[in-house]
Image (cartoon, helix red, strand yellow):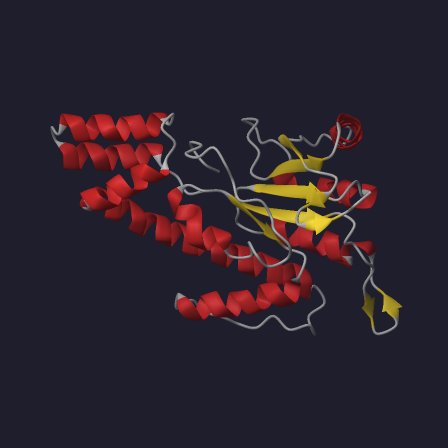
Length: 262
């Protein structure tokens, strides 16, 4: 969870693949982005690729495992989280040691940013700059959120040979379970309409409920096209004790990169 919103934008989900690794590329700069977790085969290939690139251990999650979809998603999200944290720590060191890197980072921030103004004040002051800048970086900066997207209607039944599997092994259900079991402290963005069975499944995971300090480890974000949709979906979740942390308005014509000309 970000301590501060460094930027005035986030990178939304774009199709199944375009933002599949966006956090690895931009999260160290405080930019939040959304990963689609619909395609477990693509996710497993990306886990192999980034495990090799960053010298992380990799063990294939075969389709022979009963819950392979959820396990693939959990493993990939944990890997992304680990890589983002490593890159963020390296970036903080770079900012503290290189004035050029700090100036380039400041140029990325909006002029209205209080954090940008704080950096500028420290540079103008110049007194104990090294110690002050390190302390400021530690207290004010955090990586961008690694959010995930589930298109609720992509929830087909799955089979073991000719035997139908239980509902929790449906595509969207498995994706939700994969996210819920991950180490991420972030949000799931639900799009493409309401799925009562999937929404009811949230009750099985404690991370979606507030802790004793009313803090949510994992949040729910709804993408809606109008107020009526927001009310219906929000009320359904609220009756189960689930909080909707944010509503995002999406165009009925261009929903997450998919054209619905209706």
